Length: 132
Image (cartoon, rainbow, N blue to C red):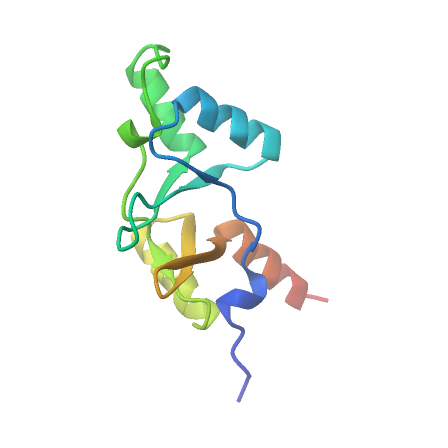
């Protein structure tokens, strides 16, 4: 019987967050500067849920607004609550949940505290590492 690989072993621990009141322009600038495709949107109070905003969501909004994004903020676009998984679950369960819900990235939380982000790319990289 194989030892399960846990989400915490392959997730990205260095997570970039953004305030929901930040502008879309700020979100795009932050993504560009960090070379990433999503940001975790911070909670507004302790028992709140994290959100997520992706470059695809921003692009859709820009297209819908004919490029007029100057007055739009993260809270106009992001998804909340973000899909999330625990650090302590087997990656195959996380992958199954992501695939069945059409989600490319999930927040990784324990006790409603952000621990990381898991993406389809992380899962693919892990699978590729098994092939020698």
